[in-house]
Every structure is written in structure tokens, then in C-alpha cells.
Image (cartoon, rainbow, N blue to C red; front, side, top):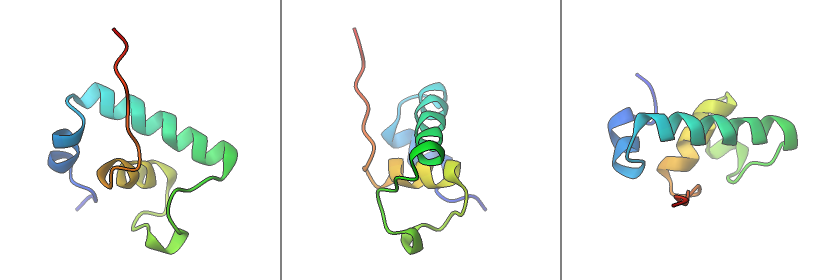
Length: 67
């Protein structure tokens, strides 16, 4: 089973497309800068994309809509 679940994430981000965009952008940042927002041992996932999703679930990543 994947962690965090897509149902929990879609309560935070209102569309799957935004979720994909935000998480892929954040995972690329992690690869380039090696900057994590939590301690490495606090993550359940080992890969950057899963870690980005965990950060979204914990509210560490927010996004702003441009109008």
C-alpha cells in the first residue's frame, strides 16, 4: 500500500493534476539541492517523490493559485 494515500492528499490538493505538478517540482528540488524539510529518519519513503508527497500531507508544502 502506498503512503500517503491518494484520498488524504486529494483532501489537501483539489486535483490530481496539481498534486502531480507540485510533487514532481518538489522532488526535483530535493534531488538538486539535497534539502529535506524533515529529518531523514522521519520519512517513510526512501525516494524523493514519495517524500514530497509526505511533505504535502504534513502541510509542509503549500501552493498559491495565480489568477
